[in-house]
Length: 249
Image 1 (cartoon, rainbow, N blue to C red):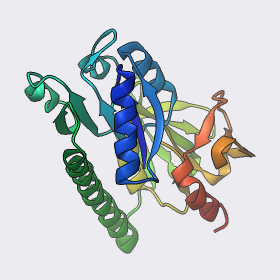
Image 2: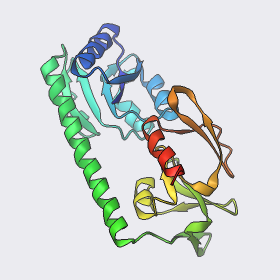
Image 3: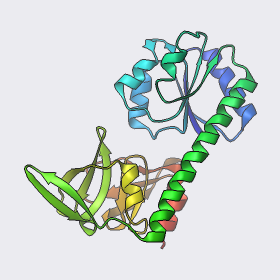
Image 4: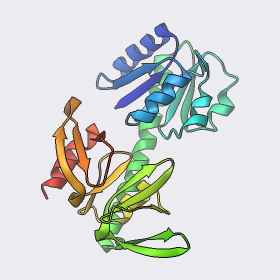
């Protein structure tokens, strides 16, 4: 499990890391960040963590400001010395609200709650995918709007789906980009998984769109896509093995 710690007190961050190691030595702490500004910058350029541990009062303001500046979809466990923010915390995507000094048993309960919630979500995704596989009810086209016109785009004309500024786009073989009325998660379920693969939280790509695959740091892969100027398209670490199997079908 990959986690991000947003905490401006060094000793508190070290204590949390020690307790996480006690809970599960396989937990990877991606980074420890001490401010709203640095947290926003980190979350913009990195793959989203599976879980975020977040203090509320940071070096440059309240951590709630992070949610105002970017779309943070990762579950959050708040850890703070103050109890007056509890109601506000549960208005965002929080799993639990823990008070300092941090207690291992309470931390364990919070992480177990996260795992239970995550498993339920994964099971639902699997059910949705198998329903489509059993009925073979995959979409053959997506409808887009071009000015005042409505145009269907056949699936074989789509290079890849991608997210940009809270919207989902398709890139076509004619190098046109269109907004579609689906999230990337919805599109992934609706199209044939033999034709497209979700390589990370931003891209859902076709086999034909791949120009090059390059070995990258930490056992990850870097992808070069047709019609794309994005030079940092990375296959998520947890998806690398599945991606290799998909390529070899």
